[in-house]
Image 1 (cartoon, rainbow, N blue to C red):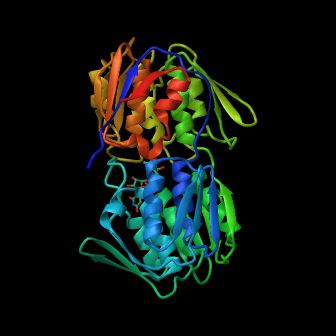
Image 2 (cartoon, rainbow, N blue to C red; image 1 turned 180 degrees about the vertical axis):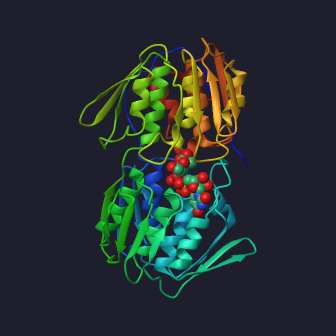
Image 3 (cartoon, rainbow, N blue to C red; image 1 turned 45 degrees about the vertical axis):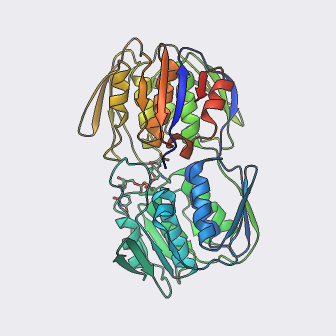
Length: 419
Ligand code: EPZ
């Protein structure tokens, strides 16, 4: 049953003040998967209150874990994990479910699940994951409604990724920490969320080197122990609020717990005339007035401009002072919002992986449909800047990754409420 939510926005109100940025969705999901490897208690602090986390907890409970939330902490007892098939509706609901596969192969030697879900931003295959598991000694069978992976003992090996896939890098690390012998990942993704995963696994006893680089070497070492970890702030959520401040003539302070939160985002902010000031636990974003257009920008793996900020950037550049070109190089279907922005009077067209944006003086409020998580956030940004009223109709995507977005924005002075 789809629960349609409507974000009703009156544009033109500048965002002012400060907000604490939530914990990172794309960090906490692999950390929850990692807890499956620990027969002690794993406590994750600073977790975001978002539906993807709830779905991931439902999955690990199905596998025998005790898991509960206490404010922004998650407490997981994985002492009695047993292998089981994960029901299709659970797996389809969250992309992070795929990360359970590596952890369960390592822990139990068996996992059956459907192909993972996630935003419809492309085909999103998992071939890199499965071929790595096979190279480590697992048997992968394609069964009626998904994948059955089994192994007696995983063996360390060298895994060369054709592309620095975030999920595949994380899944191989999760499988490798209990493999016999070292595993080397070549062409590993370098996203900060992977560093978080490696740090937690090292606290659990794993021996991992090359953390944060393209070559990661993993040796076993996990032993039963009680561990605690504080999740990093969500860099994509911080970037989203930064763009919202930029297009509303705002001035906000995002309180964060890592000093590299704006890597990949800050360079483009400066080019657009958005001012950034850093403190030891915050980044301040000050609108620079009219947005300066960007002649060309391409989404790239970290530390390049993140694909998860591409839709939000398109909303911002719709109000630029000239022509901008965005090239989406990571996913093949991440231009859903073009049709929605055109309803607001934007001037955008796309050809293959490029979007051509001619900035307009202003956008006008409209009724818009959300088709993916980051696209939904991008439409809220457009509504905050538009003249008149915008209604963003969301079948549940935005709440997957953004905690209290309407409350946060209205506390910053934005005129937005959830109908
Ligand atoms: C993670 O997705 C993030 N999700 C995505 O964030 C993010 O956009 C993406 O990494 C890239 O940074 C989570 O962490 C839960 P990939 P993931 O494997 O792991 C191809 C959001 O909005 N590929 O790095 O699925 C794939 O098709 C979400 O928070 C294969 O071909 O991304 C894509 O073109 C959206 N075969 C490219 O690699 C594979 O086996 C990058 O995908 C795996 C991936």
